Length: 107
Image (tube, rainbow, N blue to C red; front, side):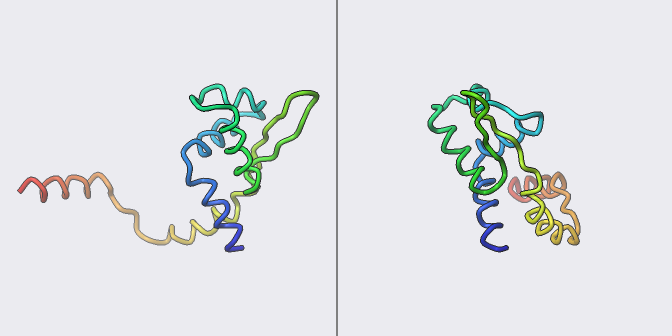
């Protein structure tokens, strides 16, 4: 399980891949539609999609001449379970911490 978690977290470590996953939350998308909002080549998008597919976060299938991407939400189950274990700790008030740091640094 640790190796699979490493693969999933490595895939999630890239902002472009996280954005692609967010886009696929809405519906299945053709690869060209996935690539449209990004200012990178179709080849680069294909590499990102390959990483997501290898991690099991998405699946790809060819329908006619078009390759479609589909989110596989169950792939995040183990990662989510692992992260929930840390939810037992008290939440940090980041706004209060930021104010504290501002005060300390300005003195």
